[in-house]
Image (cartoon, rainbow, N blue to C red; front, side, top):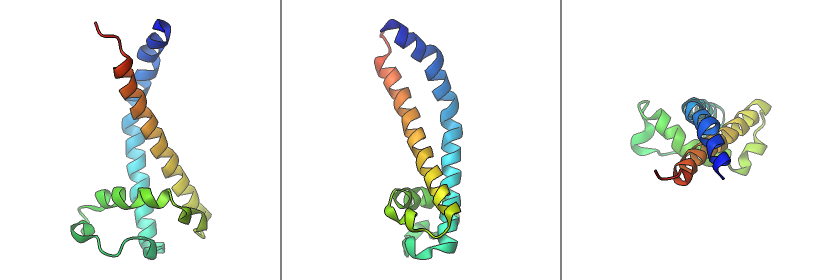
Length: 115
């Protein structure tokens, strides 16, 4: 058990810390890019009334609120563009990677021996 914790603390945890922020930025970029694609090409898939989030100031927050349920739905396979399908799949894989990295960081702090 000690060797697993040593490997986790010496190799896996620093790699997770160093890669969580870039993966988060890639995920945010993909969500914003997909939001503009859906807004331009498939406006019927986006909600019509977003209230206060309808301004340009909240475009990142709006995309983080609207896009994740869309990329997890079956609508993605029905999109006519192969490029848009691949972008949705990349965003979904990036979200899984982000969740995995955060879970590894949280579990490492839970499993870390108390001194």
